[in-house]
Image 1: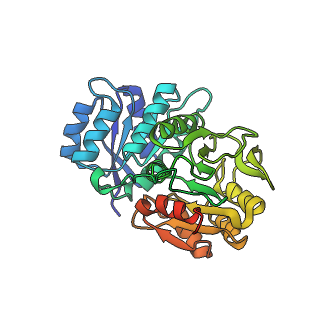
Image 2: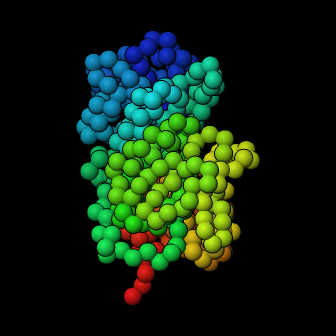
Length: 342
């Protein structure tokens, strides 16, 4: 079995060596080259034809985002972003994920010294992603006019992981300004979720915000689970609010999609609409089944448009999914599922 060929791009020689050491400790990965700049990386891509590239977000000559945009347009390939936890670093990483980077990993720090432990696994996942040029990927949809769409009182619950930023952009840009209250758990480190909410808020007709304890669930608002040590749930019976609960990782994740979906089944029953999007593993599968068994409507992203068809597949195998859609159809399907039928 041939090894996964990786090109490491970072302006710091120390960081390039650290990334290479971590990756080559895995017998399935070979670091075939390293570059200190985008210009050098461009030449090495042509010469070495790597399977995956790790890319620093902050580099001289040409920043990581500008380089990524060119790579995805001219020579699409799987890219894992290597980011700092600074405000600029996390914001740039969200932009990179929106452009088509498969995933991100945080640089080690005093507060998070073992952050690179997950790097080999993310590179392996990325190596199986078939990247296409942007025109063939996510297509943003025109949202319906808020005067035309009449919500029927349901609420929407979404779960996503690897590839989820692209998927969320596709769906939420199709929502009208008066969309149902929508709660989203996207597997992502702390701080990143705040910048994700800010970015989505600028792109979408509804308001998008990071969820806070006790925030009342309002039409026209999307609530993103904060990354970290708490699970986003919906609380209430007649009036509803965001709850952030302790409890440790579920399916290896905190926040967990299963926790969000199961709370939706308990609180809303047939008024809950759940959708499970691209991602590795099986988080969300059982929770989606809970929604379906409570009388709610469930859907999942199809295999053809999923960056990683892990979570949706697990939900399908469990019998949790009523219907699968390509990502370009899900936004419209959710609006149709929550509209008053005349």
